[in-house]
Length: 311
Ligand SMILES: [Zn+2]
Image (cartoon, rainbow, N blue to C red):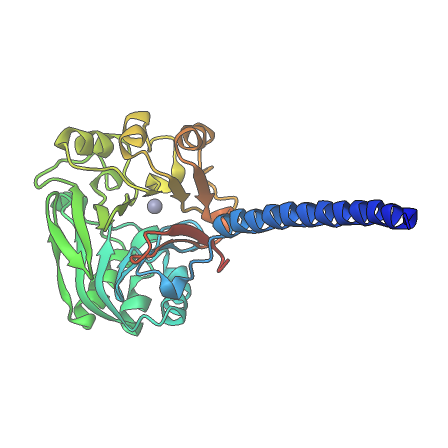
């Protein structure tokens, strides 16, 4: 017997099967979209943790001043320590990071917002070597901040001396090169006597500038030294007199970090400087707004990211 119902059933089955296939295709497409979306999200939310990053640069939030911690393969270097009032903040930060010893402590230049916190740091943490810039003797400060710094250096008993352009040293597997000032360089002022460092680790690098302004930037450009970097700690808290276009173009940073205080009386960072930086760097951070800014680099994967306030 001819069974129409069966045909009907068959046709019904076909449409059911088509519907199921359609649903499967939609579900698969949706799933693929979801997974690729999650992958994109995973790339954006790069999950590299501080503990897993062999190379780290921490630009600490010390208000109006500078303090930068560089860690390479467990070896630590502190560049500046903020104002005297920030000393305890820096010490607590080092302790939270589990830093019991600094291989190097670097005073970029002897002004209070850079060296004021060192006595507290030197009292709390062991330091291997303390380095400062080779500025002219007549520029040596006579105030109590510098006297306290020298007394703390003496008390610590660490090796203390100057470095000049071209000097290099190791920090774990990182290579640190002094870019400026040159020996016998006659700076206009202490800002332009800032000890400027380039720290290189595998394929990444950062430049730490102290309060360098345009004259010292010019000296570095004329030296022909390699100054490309992924991270630039912007000179002199983002002032108008620093971070000239020529210097910025030569460094060509992916990330720029400005260290300054909230509503500081100097108007740092200057609007024009910020515009220059933002036109070159992919991302610009300001400690006054972002808090402590950390650059992380994973030696095994080459992955890097910026972590702001522990995120
Ligand atoms: Zn300063």
